[in-house]
Image (tube, one colour):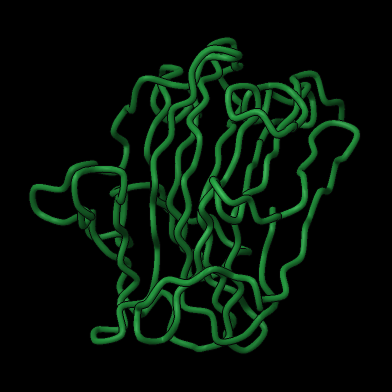
Length: 242
């Protein structure tokens, strides 16, 4: 992931590439998300939205749009609409748990969605929009109670989950990152939000990378490109041990 320091952060927007994982094991998960961690008395709540492939949750290997919320990262949270958390908009262009297609094809086709998750300056709720349609489409919100403080860390994350008795699934395209959008998973046109709900380039914001298994998965720097804006690439192959 790339993440900010804890502080007065108000949200993120990015284009997120979509990659399938057709050979993923039932107990594995891989995906990518916009994440907001909210600190309160030494504990963190978490809200996030993105795309993932978790066969055990949906009983197939489709790429799915998802949301997730927990009021304490030590405890298990809740995906999609399975409990109180994300509130979908009426007639939303995309709903949590929905399969999305087509995925990117390695070396041939690049497919992405552009999402934003930011604090609404009026309500204090965390609103989720899709921006790759003709006009921004409101998907829903996380109630402000999930993030009541102003001490926040925001992150763009590629992730995998798997049992320690198995090997890891692929992350992103299933290849280590490079600068080719048809061969590497990415977050591009990364924007941050201010307290008034305006998006801006993060050129003055200090950010930090976390790569906890560089032998298995990796990420490039978060760098500016004239055509792609602030961008980073991430991913890695299946087979990670431990």
